[in-house]
Length: 106
Image 1 (cartoon, rainbow, N blue to C red):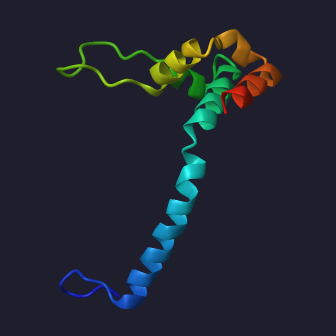
Image 2: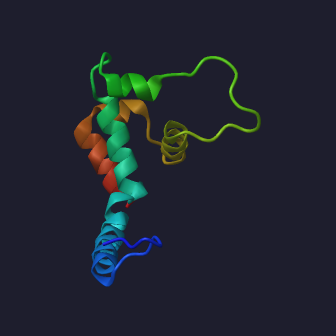
């Protein structure tokens, strides 16, 4: 239980620690950029044009942005990585070809 001063008893702390340890074990699997971003990119490109996920990926925000240099978007990073590896949108449309190219990236 949580105490009045904002602390937690040992049982709660142990559960939290166990949860964080399990999360830390999964993070490398969930964040394997070399594979997962390319798979997501190809998956979204193969979707129909009226799909909301594809629309969100291709959406351009209108109007002035905040001051300073804009942050790089996920799409820009993947696009630049694909250009560096000589991969393009047409390759992503063909699922088998795209997966073979992704395996070569590893």
